[in-house]
Amino acid sequence: MPESVEDRLKGLGYELPDVPSPAGSYVPATRAGSLLFTAGQLPFREGKLPYTGKVGQDVSVEDAKEAARLCALNALAAIRAGADSLENVRRVVKVTGYVASAGGFNGQPEVMNGASDLLGEVFGEKGIHARSAVGVAELPLDAPVEVELIVEVD
Amino acid sequence: MPESVEDRLKGLGYELPDVPSPAGSYVPATRAGSLLFTAGQLPFREGKLPYTGKVGQDVSVEDAKEAARLCALNALAAIRAGADSLENVRRVVKVTGYVASAGGFNGQPEVMNGASDLLGEVFGEKGIHARSAVGVAELPLDAPVEVELIVEVD
Amino acid sequence: MPESVEDRLKGLGYELPDVPSPAGSYVPATRAGSLLFTAGQLPFREGKLPYTGKVGQDVSVEDAKEAARLCALNALAAIRAGADSLENVRRVVKVTGYVASAGGFNGQPEVMNGASDLLGEVFGEKGIHARSAVGVAELPLDAPVEVELIVEVD
Image (cartoon, rainbow over all chains, first blue to last red):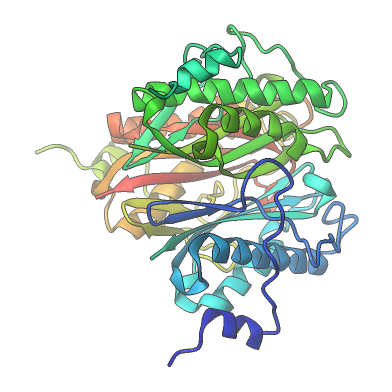
């Protein structure tokens, strides 16, 4: 019997967090047909943001990669809530990453690899996605990264 | 007979604007299967932008919330044009809000609640959506907010 | 026999580039049902970025329009790879354009017309899309423009 996605997460040393409370009047994920859209996820860990500020100034690239990974974990929690189980994920379709960037910082792809690599580790072939990464001026709560996912579900 | 979405809008004191003319070579909304995608909507009111500049500096949070509400109204006009009637909206799926943000302004979620709350008032359960809110450097015509919607239609 | 999309591209003096290598751990395009999502495309030409920096400061509006056109060409290459042939494109659904913008630059729509006009020339009615254009702080590799597409395919 193949390992479940959640077992693989645990094997990698990750624990699926509780679904983060949205920072406004909306929900963590919605479904339309076979597509599931997550809200933009901030890098919360146990209810707190371990990093704040601009990448390339207040936050190092390594820490920002870890923040992107946390965003992806929170997105997985939102997907589990919206699709009942991560086993129902047929394909990660699109990842969009917003990186709060200091002037002159252009390493958004490296930062976002923190999220993309996690999805590849967890889902294998099904985790390979199209991606956009951009450098924004400011993010909610001074988070360094915000990530949203579109996944195809059974 | 249940109240129509447009009646509810009127009851809330809103009037659906004319579909705003796109600021470039594109259309206000397109449909693919049961999904309808709006163009990014600026906070036009009667053809003018009542607020311009950066939120947290030139534009207060309260005015920016009102701007987000105007963006949402223009998005509804685009949806009505693309789906024939707002009665055909099965679900608001995703809202993305771009807030032109002064350095150090991190209240994008509060601003975007202006759009999200309107959608909840107008559509009830069907208006509850996933959302991303980010702070961008500049927006077309110096608008303080731009909002795009994905909705599921019959 | 009607002209093929690729013939039309050639007739307009464009050549479809090779699919650009993603700048991170992801793929150029993914498909979910009849929707195809491209990754964010940078304005590569023969493997190099002909323009870098902020629009309205380092890069003129005309050059930025050309950059947006290059992004769109790279997106078409990604779509051809993901959908086997550009003939399978039923409709360009959504274009999102991120313009690295100098403070006070608000001409994002004009810049993005470089991409939208190309799609109209190449696909005719099928190329007419909804669009969002925003001004971001920084982009990967200091690119002035990044463009992503959602298209409906057969």
